[in-house]
Length: 215
Image 1 (spheres, rainbow, N blue to C red):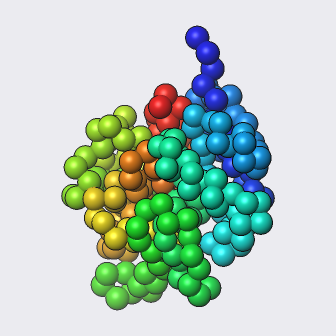
Image 2 (cartoon, rainbow, N blue to C red):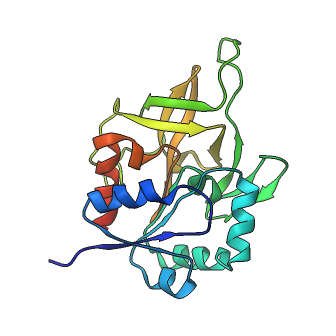
């Protein structure tokens, strides 16, 4: 049986080692690269990222990878965005002014609310473990990367900004922070984004990575 290969886009933004180790633990051969030809030849691609949205987009543009990632979407290549990688999938971010994103999923990136639903100040960034729940508009997790997971399982978050997809059906999973429903995972066609870190979320996150490498 051949070992499934996963390309992780190495564009200088984020800690790739934990993503690589998580995927390798699940049985994948990981290729870290920013070479367009290698990325386009892959059957599965991960877009990681931590830090500022604008810096990440500048890095992708500098390496001529924006068109490459859009071509992956056109080809229906399975694409997984993690943390900032999820946010880059959207059309625009409000972080430090408006910055255009990859535009693969309609919507914007907006700040996590600084107040709870009851009006109390809450800690930003949102850091820690939060339970996943299915979005009412998503139709459930069957056929998605979350199909092996169950509502109530917790994953690890570190984020000051969050996705706001235009189409509610693209909200695959949510979590509650300060009473607010925060998108935890979004998806469209073969594109999935996790705001949490599956590679840092124990067995719950590893189930998602295993499902991804089986695509």
